[in-house]
Amino acid sequence: MKLGAVTLAFAVLAVSMPVAAQDQPATAEPAKPVLQLKPTLWQPKTIHRSQLRPHLKPAIPAAAGEAEADVYVPPSQVNALPARTGAVAGPVQLAATHSNVPPEVSASANPMPAATIRDFAGRYLGAGVEVALSPSPTEPPRRMSQVEISGDASEFTVKWATMRIGANFKAETVKSSQQEITFRPSAMPGQFVAVAASGGETAPDATAEIKDRTMVVLVSTPLAKGGRSIQRYERTLTDSGMDVVFTRTDDGKLVRQVNLTLTRSGSSIWRSL
Picture 1 (cartoon, rainbow, N blue to C red):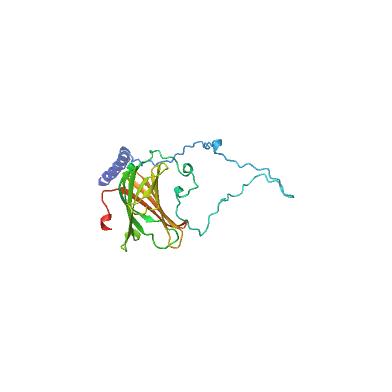
Picture 2 (picture 1 turned 45 degrees about the horizontal axis):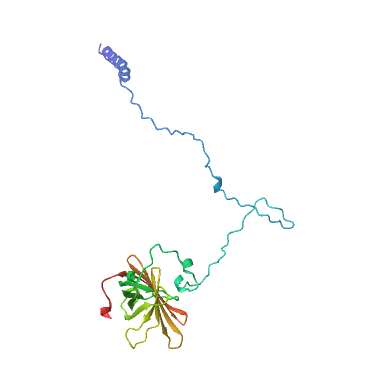
């Protein structure tokens, strides 16, 4: 009796298990991404005919025994002006320092009106550097300069001072100099000549000229060994002051060139000179 009950229970359990398994929903696995390739038609890039630069084959007869080539290979480009090795560039020469260069060729016309003596009147203070005239391992010395111009077209005075200091304003022995020259109109328009500071003195050998917005002052002094030393000051007005280019030639040879940038200033350096 007991054995029959146990057998019946196992039979019922065997029949109910598949049904329970069918009642439970199966867990679906996540779908894996599939790489889809979309074919596209390749379109060649359009090249305009203006971008094509064909080399035309020149009419060069073939050498004896040599077949004519179907493709012309142009020769390599060669610089007509080969670079000079070991050459050292000298200072930049301004067109104004060359008397044989016409002004209309050396520079373009300045859109600003030509300056007058009153435009130059004022005090200017600034600094600059000497231009190396030959190769040197040391840095060129610096310059501090002040220019003061007063007067009008009937008579004006130019007073300037320069202090020579070490490279990068290093502490060295300061060398200073100053000059003052009064000019009056000459027979040529726009040109002026120096006059003596007082009666009994000799007028310096100096001239001044207004070219556009640049005042050019030339000072000539005799050299002890003969010949003359010419100091040339080109002072060009700018929005903030003036740019100065100073050159000195001894007996026709350039011995010094200094480029300076000055601004209008109310202070003075002459108190310490």
